[in-house]
Length: 174
Image (cartoon, rainbow, N blue to C red):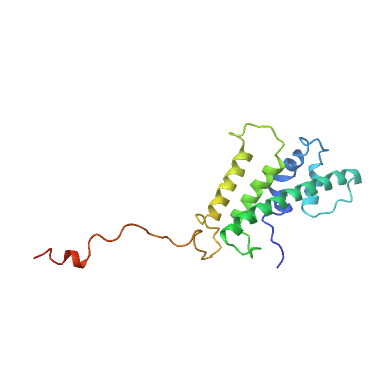
């Protein structure tokens, strides 16, 4: 079975969009790709009408974005494997795509200087990790219709032996 990506390059072109994605390269000390060329490449469209040098800059950006998507894939897989999901998933739930988008965005913005408490990219990343931790622990369902038992097995009850039994209560009502 072929690998099913949690987030595709085309989905990243939709949101957060090529403008934001191209801006992430300005802070890395790399040439910033033109958003329209980056958008075309992310969507798999033709780029022959643009100057080859500019297309090369955008191709390097796509490679970096692809690396972030691949790192995200591995991270999410780790949580899903811990929960017991058989990978690759036959169908990727939309909630998983949202989490992968948040993690990929965070990875691409890792050089950014911001106030972490108020940064929406950091907030979304942390929220995605919290939910993935809950999935791994069996506390949150991806809605795949699975019947996986909660992580850790069935509940176990322990305690002292019975204080009252039929034998000790036999003479009580007489």
